[in-house]
Image 1 (cartoon, rainbow, N blue to C red):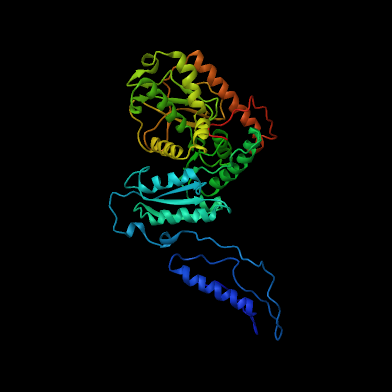
Image 2: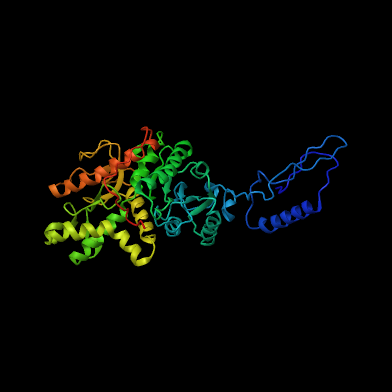
Length: 437
């Protein structure tokens, strides 16, 4: 593998500085070759164009050649045929999982859960394709090194990159975690536009190169509307395959109900988060159960349910920031694991889970063409169906209407990103997202 290329020429002379540079590159190549093979550098090399008996100066080039990144990392660059290996016959076909924001805190917890088999099972080999930015590429290399050093037998490949069209190639799961945080003085409308552009581009990339049945989980906020933008820019992928993460909100609601009832959290079931991942979200205690009984029969303090419980769930992320000094990362990664497992394992009989999904055809009368958190069940095949046997009262309907109005306003605010013309922002109020500074 050549680090420097010489185009055919005659009487070529290298200056001392060029020889020094070439020597350094070759030395560096020798040091790195034992660790990982490098791809052929597109821009590396010394080029010249020489007429007979005439020497010309090298073509002007940047003083520093951009560092080319490997398509794969370390031992994962080794090519092999998985089928030809002496593998356990019960192992399944390798699946490709793409993760954006892969150098961030949430991914730092999540990737090792994925690689260990905790998410897809102890017989499911995976390939991780990690998307970062130019700023985070070195941190991304560090993540890949840690994955390499962990010796996970199910982790068969790791690749890193900054181009979604490369990282999303053949992806069967896309976990879109990376998003810009809301900065000081930033309006919610500005955040919608800023992150919306990121997810529009990622939607186009998924549409172009991912598996036609890729499952997409959007974590980056505002996740409901980002998921809508993403699916609108990926018309060749079923809209039903896109999810916005509201499982963390569900987990928080279960925690609060378990505390109040004096039971362990595994006694709490049938909890739904309705609507937007914002402070308008609706944690549903009307349909929830504790040890098989309706919550309102177990917790007699209905005022607590309507006020303190609801507000605690809605504001949990902000309170955590005040206590911890940063937004939730570990618990978010756990909720991502829960969300995926809810789709790849059958839902327990009579129970359901929450996910932000496309509303077209929903049985609840919720406005169509938005991404709205609703109760779902799965047979464990990666698909889901909406739960029909839920009940509503005036309290629940009123709050669902409020979060629905917010999502419709957000949709109008990103009209330019979903093919609906000029954006018009009339957000009803500046509701902070759970976990925002």
